[in-house]
Length: 405
Image (tube, rainbow, N blue to C red; front, side):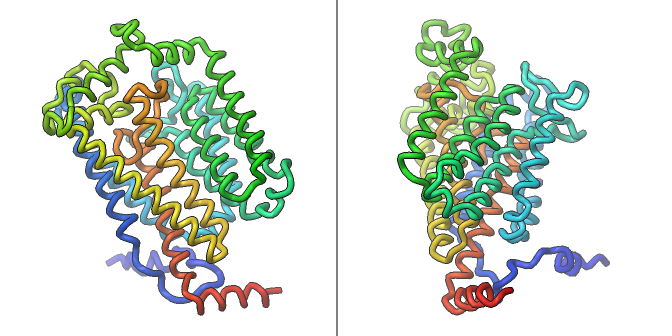
């Protein structure tokens, strides 16, 4: 019989070069909110997708089976990612970014990339289509976290040091805009800005850079007729409720129908071919309709716990002098919180449509799997920093660094 434990022991990288002792157990305040979000996602995707699944595939549970498969794949890949120490991610960060840039170029090549709804975003791999922009978000965070570790002191005194990683990410954003995928580019740039700010950059230099980035985003938004149309429909969806404003007006109707406690799971009317993308980008509206304000508040509460806990991991990593783990935790927390906020804002008509999924909830293989892997990195950073909070282990690690040639 194959000894799986023995195989894993041989291929698993060491926890870190200079620490000893077993890792502490996983933090339940990080694990259980994520599991609840995944479970809620399976439930709501099933409810929201049954009518369209029955019409398109002749099987009402078609999307349920696929979502469960994606969750399983995400958890399995997350398990292996968790067993790779943060030092390895730090060393591989630049290479991973180059790989994802190469994949973004391949997406644009006819015959390799797949075009859906006018956008080149996917590379077909048989059983599923890989959306490379999701990988780009994760690897951009890993790259920026590594850059902040290498150049943290320089960032506090030199604006050039702050500009360098943003120029690299600018190339990444340009490739995303060529698909086009404005939403993913925006997430990457603003999460990177947040990471740089938390890394201790000069406030005035950061403010100037932020103003420049926001101005550039505004120009890109206004220069595209398609994006301008989305913006105008967002500002007044009821002006053209059966054409440009159709999706948003149907989303608002769904949210309004939910009232305090919702119409009940499975009882949504808007999912009956009224609200487009009811099980993907607009699943939040179905949650609001079926679970009401109470369900929405519970959902926001789960995201709040995840983001706050991620920031606590980052703060602890700074205390034990693990700058890469700190920036990684901050970046993943910012990513989850920022993307969830944008998705909910779009569904409620507060923000223009961006095509971003609701983390852990929306149907989508690439988004769900990559988010699970990213969360595994957050769990890894958490256990490593809690391990190194032990004063004796931290002292031994620092002594070994001092004595190293």
